Length: 152
Image 1 (cartoon, rainbow, N blue to C red):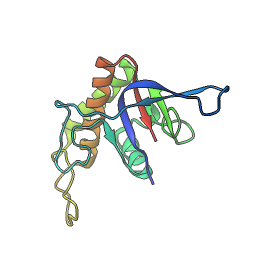
Image 2 (image 1 turned 45 degrees about the horizontal axis):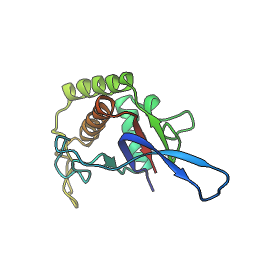
Image 3 (image 1 turned 90 degrees about the vertical axis):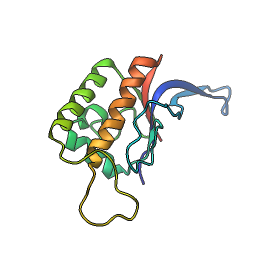
Image 4 (image 1 turned 30 degrees about the vertical axis):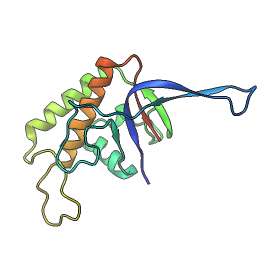
């Protein structure tokens, strides 16, 4: 089990299924961008979606020091699960600074091993995830009317 995160412009999703009771939620639509990072063996490609397991996402955020920014006090992504949460310039700045510091100490190139790889790692998975997160959060904050991260 895991999350599917999408970063970009949030739009309201309306439901009239229980009319006359009305409800709405926010969702970020999947997209691809030609300038997005496309790291070796990354299933996300140039898309704004990423599907880590619960533990991979949690461990990643703890390792890079962003857990308090993107997870709530109950251990769920900000905005809930499923849910959606806005992104701010301050959040983007913090993620960018975290990436810069992490890149300074990286010894392996960002990316993922081919499926079925055994043996020592030749790529830095954490740096790859951080590059993806930084690029898409920055893109959303700079280009979207309602920059957000949603998860299902």
